[in-house]
Image 1 (cartoon, rainbow, N blue to C red):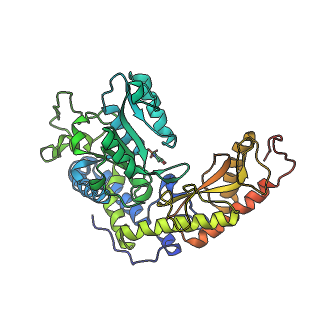
Image 2: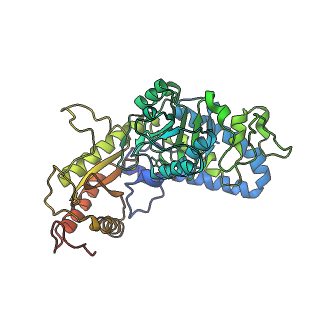
Image 3: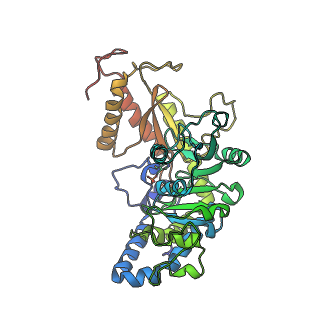
Length: 439
Ligand SMILES: Cc1ncc(COP(=O)(O)O)c(C=O)c1O
């Protein structure tokens, strides 16, 4: 679909005109839900209108070509062939699809990190309950166990930082462990070259950083493993039997099966859902290209995440999360992404912290109330919201850079956070292990 052309606009505040945000609100949490420009919203509405004008004709005859174009678009962003990419509802569904399609033997282990997205950790717990394998991750082989697949992010969600996914993918290859990369905060946020990286599996969210409506994600399966994929989640019309046969009913919606591989057909129609977000990908991609192109966006996001985080950390007299003991001038690898994590000057009692704070520490019982208080005050008084969370004995904040933000926005946010830290940090009565604060 060709999109109406847009006049080029500068990045930063001018871009706000392109997004449907309320003018009295500021978004510093693009990593939470994503956001998409008005032009993409209009495209989605147009597709919905076309869909409703005659669902059968739309789904069977109009949609397939746009779907294919969307697949080619997103495959290009991943740096890989569109034959190896399919759409899934979201990153969780993509990861679940991979994990549920592997056959596990006694002693097989799924390796994950303490930073792995919480919902994925629950998924792994569930799998360990329904299949005969142990979830030990320490000294797996010395215990006679078999690390079957490792899951890791490109950019960790909380605390946000770039994970060494390139190195881990290589380690997995040399150790003969399957790799499943969670690119929820990678796709559209940092350059990706899967052709070069060659993980076994990759899942990336289109609706976060690719400016696509919710919900839509891409699942890449290395051609060597596509035969392992028998079912979607939920199992639907394209199911592939264990003998490799795929029986498509004559009236099946997967009409392109003569040209598509079984793998492509498997994912082409997965139960009834709103497919219009997928169809918006070409418009979103055109729109990103109009905005100076992907490379410029990646550069802008990383630079702004770093500058914004420095502004907030300087205002709060704290620090940005990065590798410990970085030498002066050495580039932080943790910070090579569109998200950043900054410490608030609010310690939590009971941890051994080296850094000092002008404020008394919060008791562990105060942490939840304090976080909620920050959230409510930011939303009610300043028209924004950012994730605040405890980590290593302190409260921290996660910042998202985006093309509609610029340095001065982070100066504002820094001032708001400082005001709230001053208020919360000096509230009386308090002692280091005193009673809970009531807000
Ligand atoms: C790192 C990471 N992985 C996976 C997900 C899951 O995304 P979804 O709920 O859309 O499946 C998220 C969500 O924010 C995330 O941050």
